[in-house]
Length: 85
Image (cartoon, rainbow, N blue to C red; front, top):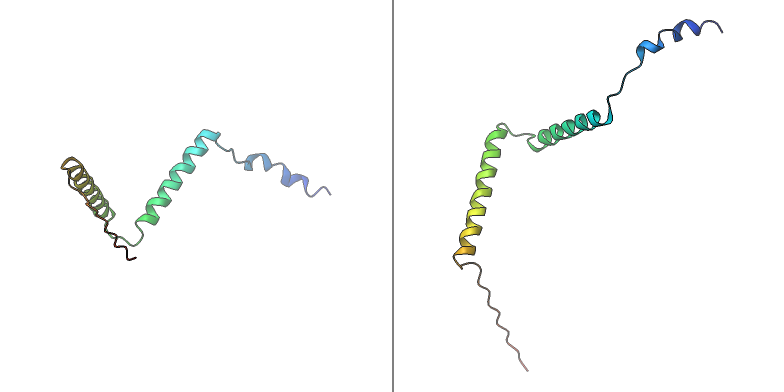
């Protein structure tokens, strides 16, 4: 019975102090962001080039949307129904 007491004496030194909730939340958010970046660029040799290409494509789409809205052009849809009686 007395054999367990010496090992409990150093237990106070092994206690891990957890950070406050705000710090812990920040750490978890950073870790999640890092995981998302890693999974998004898995298998890509140059992730910066992919990001530049994506941004360029988004800007081109946005430009196309603004020119089609302001120019009055856009999709023209006409429907033709033929009824046979």
